[in-house]
Image 1 (tube, rainbow, N blue to C red):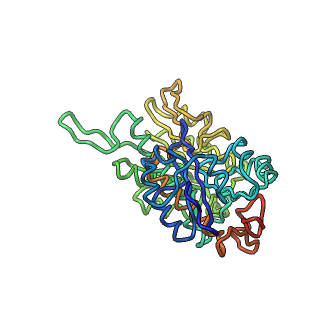
Image 2: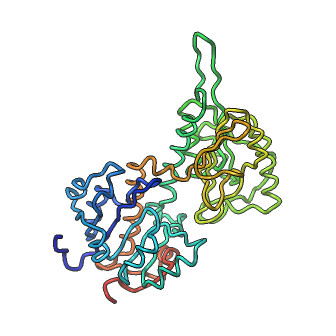
Image 3: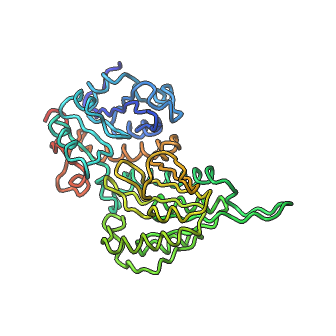
Length: 379
């Protein structure tokens, strides 16, 4: 292990690859960017392999490729695709910074365990993404963009016909009708991708501003005959509907859904239960061979009633794909974007060669959920 320069901030990343995860929180090009900010990068052997980045790539960029124990012993800050396990937390030295999607909105006990371990926890899900200074740190935007793109491809692969209209010697095949529910970052990317594949695309979102965005991509906006004129919430997310509004929306979507071949749902809420956009009644109304891709499926539920992680076919012949890991299936690009987000968050906290929390800074105040030292180097 090479001796580290005195005074440098040391940033470590582990190999997090698993059955569902192929991304890495640091890519070689970002290693070079971090060096310019006085950051030494440590990365575990093989961490980037599933994203097509070799150990040699990292070494050429200036990172030190090593083992997990060395990273734990020398890193001032650790970056994660997923949040660290309790076993890993127990091995971290007090004062270490942890940067990742920590689930802080719904798992206060986990945040408390980070605090009790003496760690400084930076929860990316709490980023005030409406601030211009936070744009390059916005993991939700970057990863949802990848997710929406992949969702359209997964739907096309599962659908038993063409997406574009085809005129053949045997006759004309009509284009597939695609409905995208949720027109945020993921939804807009799904719309654009499905359009490029030749489908006739319609979309819906409760936010009033989304209508122009949908139509700007050449898609139709689904008219439910409802007026949720105050649908815009904080931070760019749709506000939570009242129980009455949600029931009206569900009934209207269920009725309209029957006319579509593919439905893609993208209404994720960071760390919280996603809204149900399509009920079991709506699924039953779809024709045999229709495909649903629910990007919000998780242990907390999904946008589609009864959806779960994985693929199942209903008794009516509808394929329902619960797909929360789509960004990981485009791991090279997703890792590159994620790495930039995490690195920019790290650099934001570096002041005069040390990691510092400024309580007066809006980003710091929002994201630091455990531990708030004035500096990370023994102070």
